Image (cartoon, rainbow, N blue to C red; front, side, top):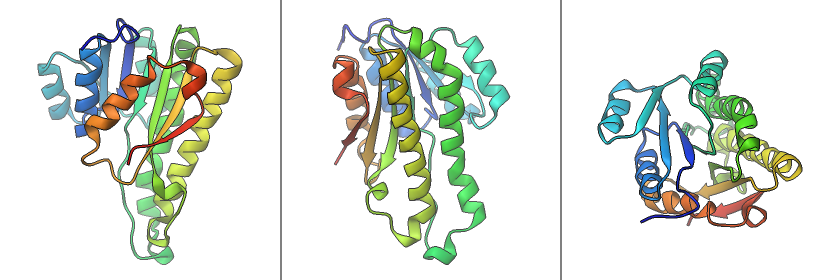
Length: 212
């Protein structure tokens, strides 16, 4: 499949070594995009490199490494942020600092990557940034309080990106995808992100899309 809106676009998949990342990489490449998969697992990155994708080993929670990534990757038109994971249980007393630090790294990586790539997004003629959030943001549970809080922070940051795009780059868009769980929805997410490129920016900027 070839999507004119994707042809020649450079898209970075942050935390892209997961099943969702692999599905997105293949879908975007089928549409004609240049796909750069970023992650920390050398074995998984090597497997994706074997499929012909560009891969870069980076700790996205390290500001210095992210700055180096931004300066070496070239012009980037899009970002699908897939860094994440779940920890929880035990009600409010069970929301440990260890679990919070683990979960918070997802938000940290989102902040660092979007800040570093902001000039590239603004310079693009059609930037598309998206995150994967959770329906837990709308209805947090005690056992997942830290998880929902981090996802809510990521959504707030993404909506702030959308505001920045509206002011500085009207052809760009930042979108939030919410899922109850990502397992089993990898292909749907890949298609939904690819579809953003053909849509008018105003129609998808600052939007929350639930992938049921």
